[in-house]
Length: 328
Image (tube, rainbow, N blue to C red):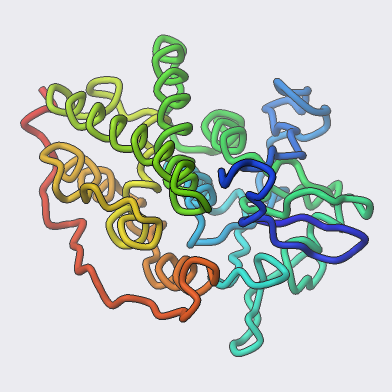
């Protein structure tokens, strides 16, 4: 993440001086929606109709917010509908890049950009906000539809249903209130909580984050003792929003972000739960540890100045068979 000032890129991961050492994530700026008929969604403008081949998704396999979008693209079998452009795992001084200068460039089919911030500038030459991923791009109008992962997954969940998406509703009307409540707590204390702990620059800010993080993990483990998924026996958006954080927790967040009170593998219910989700059709291909681990350990120089990537831990997410004992 970062921002542009007078045309120059500035890293803002560690801009915590004005917040008492607390990490605060920037809001997304592009909030349009793809809809079945092209009408305006909950936010933004109209004109983004669900059409096969029209849209492109920029992601990093290293990024948990990107993985949300990759998961829904896989769940809804939209691979032939929505093209994919993957960044390099390294996020350097100019942000997410399509090559690190040492390897062949990654595919960038729109503007032959070297960096993701150039995609934002292609949509808006005066843009000075965060240049994060995922980015959902409209090839017809040559602009960004959305850079908010929470919105993107809801578009993918339903907007393409009439033009060939796979069946399945992960945000059903009868569970929306419960899903929203779960999302709110999990985002604040877990999804973003690990970043609040990892990027804290004072002991107070770190402890303010680490307490709620493990309170919520303990609460989730107890919840999963009586049901297979977060809302019961149905997989929902809430599960898939939690999963990218859990899959990164032991390999990265436990050590790199100092979230070392307990590992996910130490939880009797969270550990088989994450293995269960990993084994769901199409999901394992969205998990790329060869991108995840080097991204965090090499990109975050203020946390790990040597850039050494640890060899462990050895984790087999296929080890635990799915939790059919709770499926009935």
